[in-house]
Image (cartoon, rainbow, N blue to C red; front, top):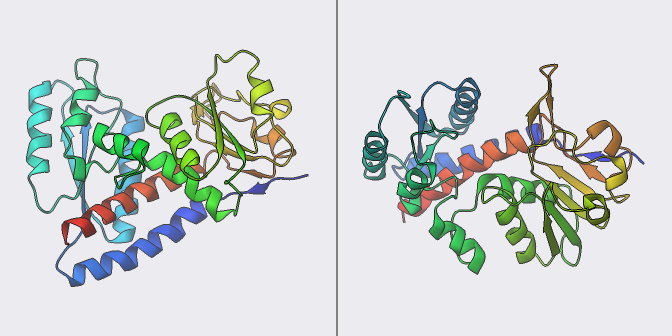
Length: 283
């Protein structure tokens, strides 16, 4: 068996082209979606992420407004910037790029973003809406994982899904989205005893631990859908996921690559959240 590859890069491009049509319709109503990004310091990886987001915005016709902030900035200075962006009508989405310098409280800054402009989906009100199944902004990476499963026509209802990772950014919201779709969900982590005994039960396996090649061939149920959220830089300089791709692709039914999998789709979902926020502001 060779797994069906779920090409996140191709799917993201398709999504961006769809969003471009939505943006054109909004512009006809006098609204151009705007995404404001804030980068504190000059972390090279963060700058690459910001550049990728700006490129996707440009492709969709979304206005990208970037703010560089020195690493020496105080928390009050960053909070004041977020407050100004909250009040700007041309800004429909705001992200403060993580990680932040140690002297800044990431939680306090993320919660300062207006709930309707929280396009990362990290605000507690948006997370609470996800728990309740109420309307809100869904975190981008879990939304990307679900979109990729749907694109591949992977059955979800009635299936056993295992999420490896318990973060508020990926693991917990991914579990909630799967529950909402009728899956039976198990959440574990890299320290779960006999992790393979759990993951081998999964019809759908979502892995987000930040540990390269944690999931090997013997830990995957034949025919399972494997969504690899991890991205790790090896000593060789190459990027690798949390799943040992070359091993697992011969047993899984579907699999996402790293790079070119969940990452590009996460950016596309960020753009979609921004366009959706702009549409709500226009009603």
